[in-house]
Length: 120
Image 1 (cartoon, rainbow, N blue to C red):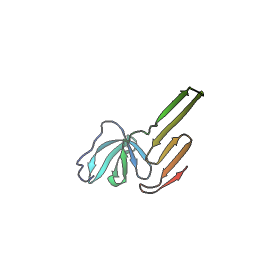
Image 2: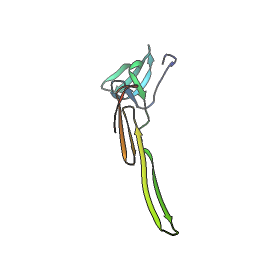
Image 3: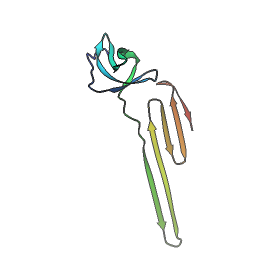
Image 4: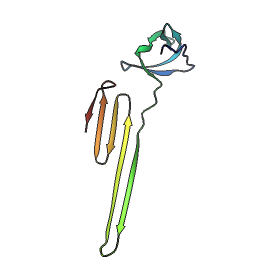
């Protein structure tokens, strides 16, 4: 962040802080390594330390996945037919990850960047 000289926004942005707080603000400038933000006319401007910022306008979490449908039919001396349906889906955020595959569901909760808990 030391190489960033200035940041401004013409409309409100989402600033996600490391403590979990989300600010919807307009960024005015950078002064002494701090973001000068304007929250509203009533509250005025305030400074936010770069070290407290987790992300600015992070992408929304979305689900991704696949559904597979299979059928088969074998004829000859015997007649065998079958069908199956399977799926997998996943979603990841900064805080957690959910993965589902037929028939397993995994949930990971990220406590820090290197430590997480898992439920299966």
